[in-house]
Image (cartoon, rainbow, N blue to C red; front, side, top):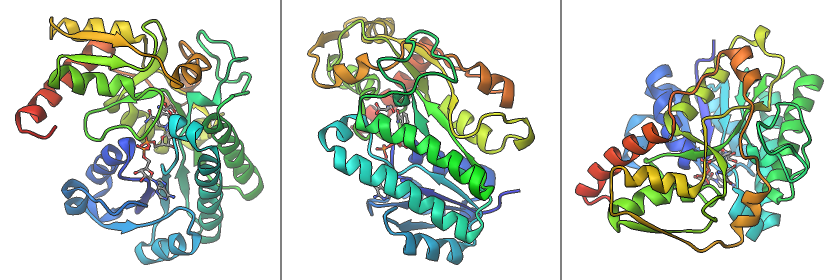
Length: 321
Ligand code: NAD
Ligand code: SER
């Protein structure tokens, strides 16, 4: 049983929601939020411990593990696809050096379990695009994707060589309403909801028919915590589980919003992120996750749209954006 958890990158799009979800399960004092940034929100500050941590600083990570007697880690700190294409050296450094630091310190400190996300970005233009299988070609053409494949393999190496317990899923694009995304190719599917409410229109950086797998945050949290808590004896895979929510194009997201905001308008101005999107799957086969740890999503596009518009509508009324 894991008792005390540390998260890296806990102020990010996923970390900010995951920190709160884990604190509800494990208790606020038992979930230590860390991030490179010091811009801590009241929600995270008031819910439990926070420490500033650069994942490149293994010594400080080791000190924090001792200080809080941590036995589980969610390693979320990373550079995402669009920022990574603008600055590939940064993406390589944070995503690879950061991850190997976490694994080396975790090995030294006897950490019982680690969760490190991979991404659908591990796939590339030579991977089958439709219902992309679990075990398939991994030849991404983005630096972000390269670090995700290498991260999956690095985790397997530490599992096999040192007997560690490292788990991860290949997230699709995550849609959420707590924290804006940090510079990925699927960010449009979040910003479109904010702009629909604030301006009644949105200019999309992908083409209208660019189909990508997406997932709403409650399903992302269920997948993350579900795999972390899964019975190890049932798992045949470890660092690289495919998971899927629903697949959509920007035009379909816009049509879903129009059901609730009839005057909503969308324009398209594809930029460099289109090439990244074109290299990723249309849809994903997540049957291994379903079979090995009972993964099952709950939200489709319309359920996501209804909830996003309700939550963001309330935030807008309160003047929060
Ligand atoms: P994000 O960009 O929103 O957040 C990343 C966080 O890491 C930020 O708070 C940032 O301050 C922090 N960080 C950056 N450099 C750091 C460093 N050197 N040391 C410590 N912290 C640092 O990212 P996210 O969307 O929350 O993603 C979390 C994980 O999930 C990443 O591994 C990402 O690749 C993966 N993922 C995310 C998505 C998605 O759609 N959000 C999809 C697939 C995979
Ligand atoms: N949402 C992420 C990105 O676009 C996918 O890993 O970079």
